[in-house]
Image (cartoon, rainbow, N blue to C red):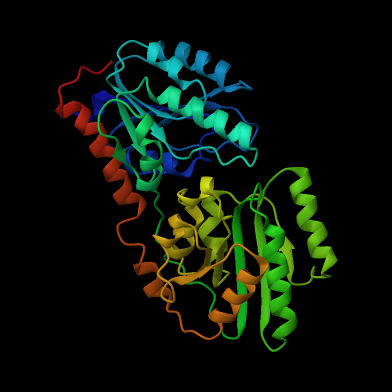
Amino acid sequence: MNYSKINIVMICTQQFGYHIDIYQYGKCLKDKYSFHYICMNEGKPKISMNDVNVIYLNNTNSLSFAKNSLKILYKISGKFILFINWFPFCSLLQFYRNNSNKILDIRTGSVRSNYFIRNLKNLILMMDSMFYQNKSFVSKGLMEKYRVFMFGKTPHLLPLGAQISNLKPSLLNNKIKMVYVGTFQNRNLEKSICGVCKFKNENQSIDIEYVIYGSGSDNTINNIKNKIDEYNANDYIKLNGYLLHEELYSVLSRFNVGLSFIPKTKYFDVQPPTKTFEYIAAGLITVATNTQANKEIIIDGSNGILIEDSSEGVYEGLQKITKRQFDPLKIKSTIGINTWEEISKQFEKIILSIEKENIPLI
């Protein structure tokens, strides 16, 4: 098979480099395939990659993005496989010639806190998915959740991954340096601040630092800042901005504990958290709320601690850390086959399965 003649066209509303999974597929496989990436221009700093053709569209909603993506597809010459990261109304893309060489990738259901909006978005997801024969899911849990609405071929599993870091994390040595990296939306991070402050007040002999990286609405950011001020904790709790993925592991190496704080709700329960994998890959002791997805990753007492999604849970998790021994190398080893190299091989198998079935490519 001549890989050089096959283009993979990826369509994703997120700007290139900010959807980590798709970015890693391109990084690991760009020497075998020719990648094109169609995305919205979200106004973020642009990230480039050699041999990946990034096409930015200045759209503000998913419907116009789908329409303009269709126009771009007709301009791409040669054979290609279309990999679509689900967004509302992506079913419009099925009108582009043959449906058989399109793959709809579902990374998440809606995690909006508003019941009506969440169920409306999930309904749109289900309706969109009916138009695609080939589908992939990020987890078995998510696959099972939506299976009853899925038509077509048996869906593929395309899980999250992480890059094993060669950097050594900061040693515990009677100082806890905890980091949170991720979105602030619907995470209730104020609870983590309360838990850290309680631990600090009851363990004066143990130095602790807690740094929060990420982004969210102005209201969410203000709530976090106000909670830090309420506890007069600005000297040991810091709030920072968005962290680019290429900076991630160098930053994580300054810490020894990673916090994966996911609320325990039905809509979050089966959603695999990227940062849980990345903390473990960096050798950090991972304090994670005990959602079903985190239970499948965390080996309690070996690579981390499972906690309740409460301030008391964070406090108890920190208490447990001080009483146990953790080895960064052993923590990294628990990542198993979930490296991006291995996940990209699974992605490639999905592509090859289309070729194996002798389905004509576009």
